Length: 262
Image (cartoon, rainbow, N blue to C red):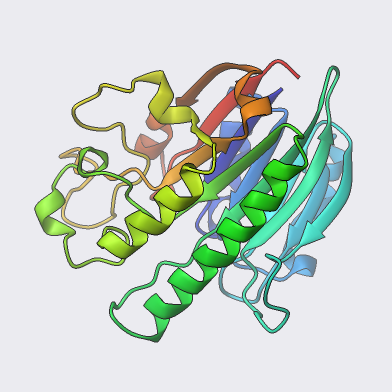
């Protein structure tokens, strides 16, 4: 079961880029962030006609997450538990019924948090604490689980090409990194990092549109795939589809993926 994550940065602007990547990468499950549309605005019928099961949690003009799956989906849940008054569409999860195993797939678009300090950064940290609590509950089920998406957190200095440029950014502040570690230390495996645990720099998943960041390879790694112990036992491979960033009208993110024996 190949499960991939892609911050598409607006489904209407990137539908052709998304379709090209889906055709090339052939994931069984693709979770999307920043679809930037209400549920009714997502091109559901086109993807269902192409054989995808489609679930969305949309928001007008901002945020929004979706799951596309070639495999059946069950027990779909929208919104991160813990705050019924949170109107931002940032979380959706479902159980994917694989050929060998059922896998819980949790798709998140974690708040950016800038400018920091300030209300947006307070919201980011509070959201991460809610995520930590939910992640602990997911682990308690002992079900293979993949907690993936755009985390908007740079975990370590080696995950950014120019650390000195990010010291005051919400993505790299010590409180953000510590909140990420509290989740990781529950027992999750960082699928991308485990492929090359001793890398001195990179790999990256995001390059800004400005300052020739892509051309200079001044990227950051903020798109993550965290695996529960049961999912980590099933891992066959993981990777980053870096070349997608160099295509026509790309998102500033690139897809990340993990292949499970499920």
